Length: 337
Image (cartoon, rainbow, N blue to C red; front, top):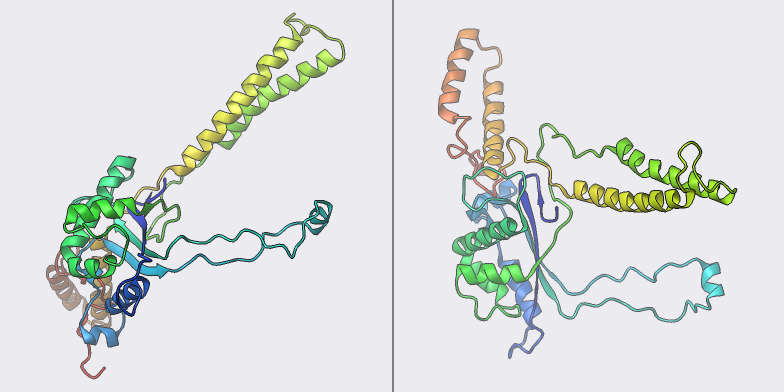
């Protein structure tokens, strides 16, 4: 299903940037680029972590990934290829210009992978209707507005139609108008792969081939002068018509069934929500330190200290203590870096 897989929404929006005169020395496209350049990145390294200014997208716990960029135009990939023999026969002149796709304006592209929830702490869903997906996108947009309104206005003020957006609901409606379907997921956290939606290929083939074979045999009988089926006495012509009709009908149904099967989203993994991912990163780091520190420790002390470790770090609690969004490590940053 577009946009939804593994309990996450893979969001893509394209907002057209104004092409009118700004009244100043820079275009709206350049102003959008400047606004994006001012957004701090996540604390992805000890150097950026030492700065301490995190990405505004880290202010909520629904963003697994977020990216914004300006798309000035589509890339020209060269001429559409054609067999030279066919082109010569058809009189195609390879020096003649072909149609080149162009955008009608530069676009602000926003991509995000988020937990498909409308309330923080809700479990990840296995499936959502189109209307439920729309509700998730709206809830996420409102969350963005409440957590980074200043940055949103700074960037999107350069876009067409944003002039009257001044609250969370209006921003949600604006982002929905800019929404385009996403058909390729961005990530996979699975510890164990779930059962895929495997097709029953053999039964589907049998359902199509059996009436097809009957249609072919009855047609051949008719061609060779057999007007009725042996032992049955039914007309070979009508047998062909009925079998051929069934073959076409079942083939169309089988194709639609296969497409529908492929559109089903995969179920979410056990620990795929962002709070669980952050908790896992937190525990990974602290448990690694625990293992290193307790090399050669006696069994009694190891048992006692591990009990204290569980009590302190609370593995079953994804809310606290945990790693914050947008940072590479939950350990203190060395001061000499």
